[in-house]
Image 1 (cartoon, helix red, strand yellow):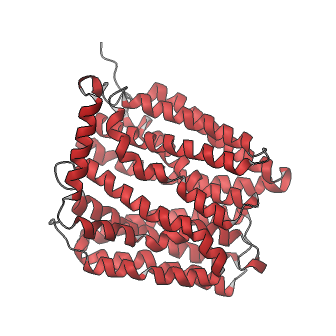
Image 2: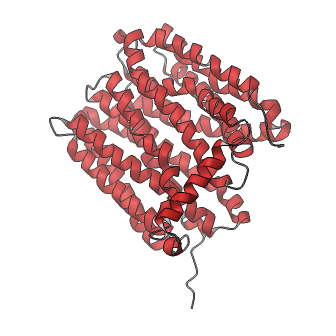
Length: 418
């Protein structure tokens, strides 16, 4: 007798929460952790940007996963690996040269997390029909964003609460250990509840054959009409955000005497990680209705404006350094709302203009890889620039860095009908 798979509601929300948690901890939470450990902005921005590289390169090893085991195997394995390595990060924070060790361990988590993303999407697309995929896509997005709220909101708030009681090191050790425990629990849960995601696909595929297929997919991507324009557009749309992403948490937590706002972790967790993340989700939802009513071609430039212009709030905060919590949180909510509203435009452009063709899924993955690279490279330079210029002049530079996005969006050609 065939064993019936559990309802998607028993695994879609939890597996996409597990996808979001490591990404957000590495991208955002680790920035604040290292700041409290007295690491410089330059070092923090460079290394926490560089460790995100596996999410850019993941399309290159995704075809090889199916050669060995089922997709479920890789989902469960990577959750367990991520959980164990988060535990090792917690232990490493007590070492004299903790920064180098912690960064190396976080890179392992990044590789594991990127592999987890490939396998998770594979299970989702293999196990669910087109109708079910559409039905549960809201759950997928909601729980991925819930991981963002839990990490940049809940965990950062908890860190601030613990710092006053047990000190910096033990507070952040507790946070990293908690991340590890959550991932291990999710791994054990999905070992029971997750469907297989297809059998071992690679029995009939040789390594050489898979490599040939990957080359064919890559070649087809780079000979697409207007592909040079599209790559430039994808990189420039988020160019300014790449500079902002790592520096904003550092700016919020920096002392007022050093041009920062002097916020505590509790305040950052509440304003940036909770209110901001909720505003992002609301902006994303409203943007979907806005685009569907008017079409992407007519709305793309206004979406680019909504995405980039709100970065001006950080310049205003750096100039006036307000002490008012509601004023600071309102500014962050405004920026995050615009971020969510405008981000949908780029996502939809990659789906409708870059991905279509014989290898649609793979080419969408390549497009997102290019997008991540476009954010990672300015992120690596952002700490050096902010240290050199100071926060006020850095945010003036960010506003200048938005100009290429407007030009690229205004002139980008549309190949496919909507």
